[in-house]
Amino acid sequence: MLRNRLISMLILIPIIIFMLFLLPIIQFSIFVFVMCLISAWEWGNMMYFSDYINRIWICVIFGLLCITMIIMTSQSDFYCDRWRIFWYFFCVMSITWWILALLLILSYPDSAIFWKQSNILRVFFGILIILPFFWGILTLRQFHHINDNVIGSWLLLYILILIWINDSSAYIIGRTLGRRKLLESVSPKKTWEGCIGGILISTGISWLFSRKHIPFNSINPYVIFFCSTIAIIVSIIGDLTESMFKREAGIKDSGSLIPGHGGMLDRIDSLVAAVPIFVCLILLSLY
Image 1 (tube, rainbow, N blue to C red):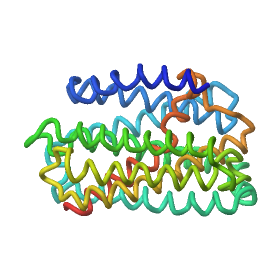
Image 2: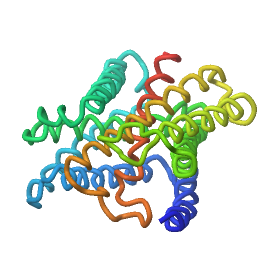
Image 3: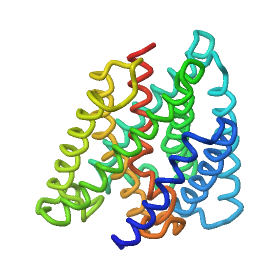
């Protein structure tokens, strides 16, 4: 399992770097759109929509919403007053949802009574999890694009790698030193030692890079570090949220797209929380 994870990462990282720095925004948006459809399909599977027609309708809904986001974020004046209400809406939606998700996790399995029998609620949860993530990806990629066409790519690569470091550190420390279970009812293998160890390592790397090595001259390094720390902590909620939904569905992985990692949602489970929160904090601190 560990070998497959490492091989997949060695293949994925160069592909991601290529897409971030060499793909034009239009092609990058198409790639994000495809990722959104794959995630929607896996969400339908995870939420036990066994009928293909239902899953296709879920993909159609997510696809239309993703296209709307692509159109909005492609506007050169997206952060001006005319559009500000939209990204304020995404910020409020993301922050509110992840607070609610934390409450659902802490009260699981009792909390499942309120959503597992409602198709509408399960689709709505998927929208709240997946769509803000892709909004965050598109927003970061185009961040200050007119003035500097690579700063957004650097920001996006920075937060992706930082969360992957947190996940990997927590996994390794948890397996070697883990004794105390974090939330056994949600994810039996996660431990407090792994969780705290991952946070310490990733925040330490964030402090080092935000102070010394990242070309973000337009953003105060203390702001970068603060936003990164909050995103790292929130990423754990994202991971546990997907674990909760998979546990309720009785499945181990959301799919089998990536060897050693499972499906698309398995690979981005921490990022779906970290990326939109990171973007929200960056935007609110600047605008």
